[in-house]
Length: 243
Image (cartoon, rainbow, N blue to C red; front, side):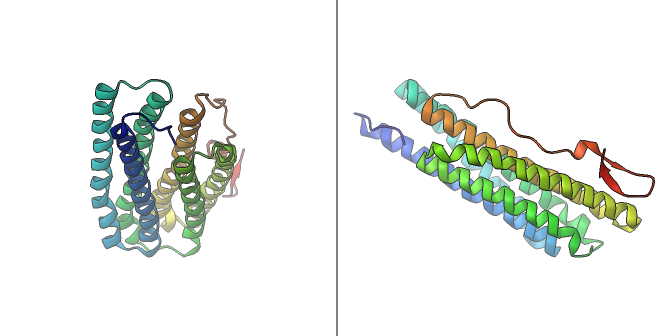
């Protein structure tokens, strides 16, 4: 965490920002988890709750932005303090977007629930969600502890999320080819899967921001990427495979 300052109020303001980020992180995690639960169970009431909960996350982001503006004007921070404050804005924006993705998935629950699908269709989505939420939780723990030694592992783990997403993309296409009645639900689930994969990307972005806050250095821009869904094609035999 940042070093202590002569003006105690500045430390209190920084601590309050950190608390708001923690609140945003917990709220975003819960929204995503509940959106997946709603998808799997066809629970439209839970989906409606997730959609309404997005307003709380939006309000928290606005509060962070407003506090940061006041802090910059009042404290005129430099070096590590400036990185801390600007980094907080970036992290808040990433978490707000995670909430938006959870909300987007919740909006598709009603359409999917209209024609209930076999349970196996949702297993891959649950597995992908578990990976993405673990990624998000771990990076929020790093933000709180500033254990930058854990960031490389978190960043590299995005590769696993991409691989699972590609596999799920291929599986859903196969279901669509095998039974046209699956097309509507599977199309919505494809969008949901992409949203969850993007949550892993946002978590990785947060990890990179925390690294910059703590060290003043930037991680290399290249990331391991194994999302090959753009290469998945349907063969003449009706199978989905990577070209």
